[in-house]
Length: 113
Length: 305
Image (cartoon, rainbow over all chains, first blue to last red):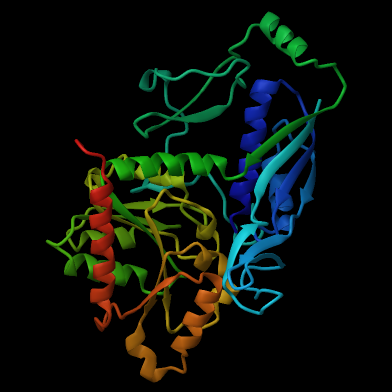
């Protein structure tokens, strides 16, 4: 899948931060990967291990936050929680859903020294 | 590399030419760097004209004194860990290139269509037929994406349409940067319609904005009605679903209504056109959709350009 490109994206963000914040090593990287994002946390962790070699992030611990999927149901006029994209509204069983959260794919925080 | 599909980076080729690893400063004198710029690594800049400049620096931009004062200003204590709040989107780099592409396409009044599907859905056959049938009705150009070979670009050029082949090597999708680099060598993007045929894959292309005007998924009736539920991402990001090979329906147990129902579960507002690239059924509806899009892109073009 495309997780290697995304792991490379993490390294790009870290490089950018290293340039302005002057640090020598990253101890911990905190990510946010929403339940509805198109990314498997296990495979991004695997790819990160490969991508971080020979960078300031080599050996850094990866922490992954998983916000739940949130959608607005047009029929219920309410925000509901769903586990995956094709799931029906848990209230009315319909599919008139608009995803409003849980598709995040972000680097939140770095612990550095 | 990636354990799932073996995708990797650094092997992209455009019309068989590997992308350069480094370019000299002389090519792009008009950019600066933040203080404390990381030394010694290759990096890229997107110029105002959408061109990519890639180069590396032999040494740091800062003297030792200024580095020391920078550390003081940031309150850094040697050996002490600190937290940096980043909040940066992982696809930020792709989004940046996509924005550059979108500005270029809008400025030239181009209608850009990102065609996505699994391998074997008939994308290239549909595209070649479309280009022949619309000859004289629209000005078109094509960017072809495949892991290897330039077979598809050759098929497109045989229709008399300019085409560029991007080979992604082990990459499983096109990204916005590849498009930025390819359009630089494709003069025919000055208005008209640019078709981008993505790498045959229903998974990875979903996550990458190329700066296109519209996203189109092609699914053939030989593939199974449940694809929208199995690969929801790509359908959720699509504007149009083309159901191809409908001339084969009499020979199959395919339930067209079920497919459309599943697709609209994932994307309630999805437009659907049923067609056959070889039989010709439904093609006029597809052509009307293209012409309407091209006309709208021309209208939105800034005055005086």
